[in-house]
Image (cartoon, rainbow, N blue to C red; front, top):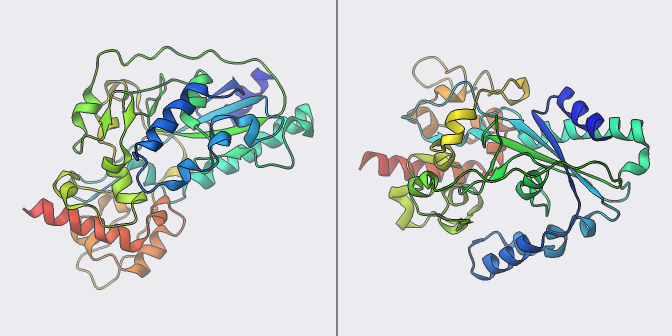
Length: 325
């Protein structure tokens, strides 16, 4: 069964697959409780909800015995021009990665059910997840032998690095399980040192100081103390991942057509010059003059849509003002 699942996942377009035994995450539960009590989750109140489900998949999905974890590389072949307000690489694609992974996970589930019976999954509870439920995806990826959680709190996969999406499929059957990988960060602190807002410490992340949180999850204005520390990031941040030596070694361009940027931007025709082919070529002026109509047309299926037009424009204005100082 293990080999069937692994080979099928790869045939569907995932870049890696591992399986872990479902169990309670005792250490993570203790850490999360302390982390939440200290307020480091910021306004993400949902992290405190469904706490027992978040740390024990057997409560989340009754009968769950195995956690299938898949990875999908999203490291781009082409990046934005550096002078433009920066968008995190995960949001480059025209299609929201949640939709891409869920479609493939549904295919994987069907093939498993066809091969091993419909009782392999829990029909009465959601059992397929992509970054949108009380599931500690990175920890399960680590337990499934797909890498280790680095000091930047992201999964590092040997051969792919940390620019990967994680998908979860919970099964109600037992199978063979993969062996976790020993962490390899050693004494390196490049990600911690590079963080402009000092959000990282050894083994923890203060979301209230994280640029990704400030530019996406935070629904209020970005506190003034961070304005000159955003490092040109307008939506999300890749700084800690970009400096990671393992990414320098392993990160390579993905081959997924579903994760390519929109090929034609419908930016208002009254702007000078021809329209750039993708948003990766947009300069500051193009981003600043983006209208809500343009936003809806260009990003209607994109992960960028989640932040919203007003939030994105506010972020761009903040980074522009500090760029010109």
